[in-house]
Length: 367
Image 1 (spheres, helix red, strand yellow):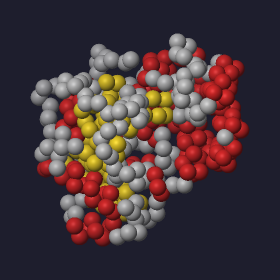
Image 2: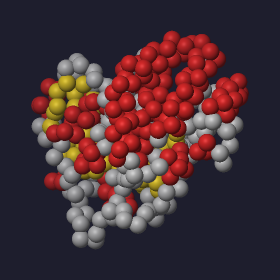
Image 3: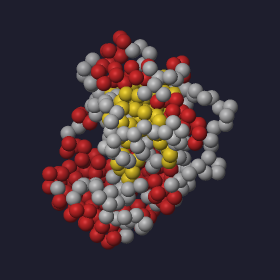
């Protein structure tokens, strides 16, 4: 695991302990979810005059914008005309935010009173550009995000997802993570913009994993603050997409992530392997075949833009693949269940020599 390194920009004792923070919330309909999120932010034990709230309205048709203008005049609203997904709206809101730090939260998330203070303290202790919260289920009994994991072919997943929630120790330190969940993260605004923000090709899904990987490659760090608690109330944003569209985006974005973020020759090798594995998922689960095909077409259509991003990262890269690889945690976690797919994953990975970075890991890890 990557620890604090000499030269990391850890803030001095004299730095502002309550820096200005801009909350960024993307919303689309479901006004009641947004209202609950805003209520939880209002209850933070953080100086209110150091907090700004920016809401990007993704073309809501339930009166959200009128309600904000009437009842929450403290909120800055960026008005979209249609549902533009997650990545681009967050970037637009970040462009107008005034805070030195951005706190991105989903509209269906509720944060605890010490949420922001824990994130800010973790950043001050580590100098990390990005700090993730620990996200629990609505009732607080199950873990939804406790750090990020990644398969070697680009499918990200939350660490310990579904496990029974335990109480972190009072002195639990921040720990490195490949990425922070876009549902609840603090990120340095300058670092976010320097890294290019979220890749707007993604629309939704894996944009947070892609950003985290890119930040590490550029010499920044991402950590998880175990005591920064948030609860995912209802997964309201996922209801806006059909299951087929969700699979399509997951497949498309996983391909783009490996193409852009691995180093040169390895990126080409893993990308070819990822294409073969996508075909196997479509073969073994025919119900997802059409979505897989659309995901592949979407990735191919976006390759010219991805090529530009890939070259830019190659020019600016500070950390190698080998340095970042330990953060994947579960590089051989199959993207779908079943021993048939796990076996084909082993065979195809060996055929392409695509998993050379993870030779010490157990290739047959179960889903």
